[in-house]
Image (tube, rainbow, N blue to C red; front, side, top):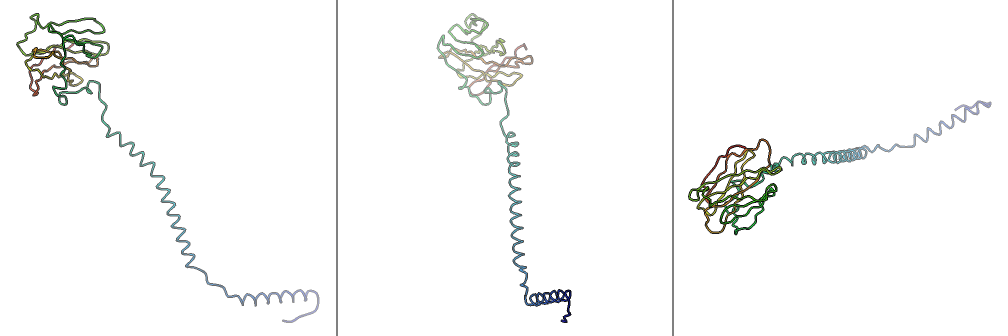
Length: 234
């Protein structure tokens, strides 16, 4: 390197000297190899963490959807809602023993719809919210106690329709089924102890314009039909 005199020459000389010094230092430094394997492993770890985070996020999003789906399906397996008439026991699921009640003369029976019912050796007695006392005789000759049969009386009481009647049979255990436009209803049965040869049945139904009584049928303990009646429609 040549050196000339003068201030500018001095500055140029110092700059060239510093450049040469830095070049010698740089040539003496050996760069370390790039850690490609470590970088690749770190990249894979970051990708795994990101994938796990996405999976957890998806689970959190899907969990509420699964719960909602379960809630939407469950009501389909719930029992269907039934009307009050249909909720009463029907002929197929009520035995004769379940519907017969043996009473002593004068014993009061709550017959529903505000009706109170009792029996004596003379016949059927009952009272309603609209009439204090009513009576149907079984000894006045109007009912043949020697022939099986079943009768029907209908009384509208508020929003209910009270149905009742006297039946005649030698069977001590019976069942009465009322077939209405709303479905079949197993009526309740009361009778006196012993073998009086008759008894009383009763039930009630919601009162509406389209209600009809198709038939009333008396069955024995074995389910055989004893008597039936098809009333005039109200």
